[in-house]
Image (cartoon, rainbow, N blue to C red; front, side, top):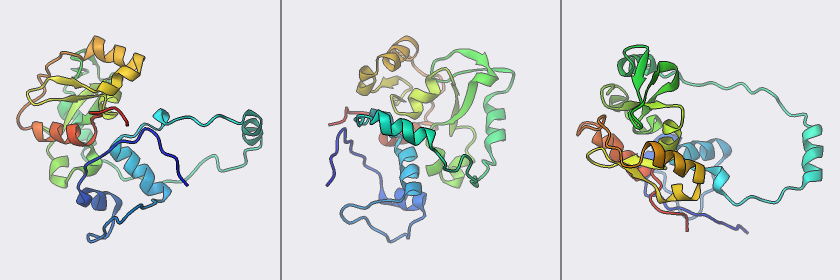
Length: 212
């Protein structure tokens, strides 16, 4: 038996899921499919799901404290990660000096506080898209813009206008940041060549409706 709350719908082509998870090209999802931990984490990243928005289970404080004090699991895990070969070239193209401008809020900041943020999630980019250094990414500041874009609380409409998710209103601190820094802005960084990547973000990442 399962109890669900805060469900959201996603319309993502099955080919994207197969590619992302390394499935057989002919595999289909029939009914409910339970994924393992690795595939679940990968899909959570793709869909930018916020685990913290789920209903919290009341904590058993006594048992929780006992579990923490008696923890004997692994403190370090060995993991292999692919290097992003184009990342250095991408950051160098976007940040041509010691300072740069956040594409979202427009603030000029030291490069330390700016990220080469992919407009379309890199995990779903084709090799040609990853090599499209002129259009695939933008500078986003670590003071909030990268996070609210990455988690779908804002997106960019055709023409460059910042579009704010209705879900932001349920998070007062997030909403305050967006209203102060992003609401009403028109991004000079938007171009017709970059629009397909922004369109992908609007379709796959942007939280366009509150959870039912």
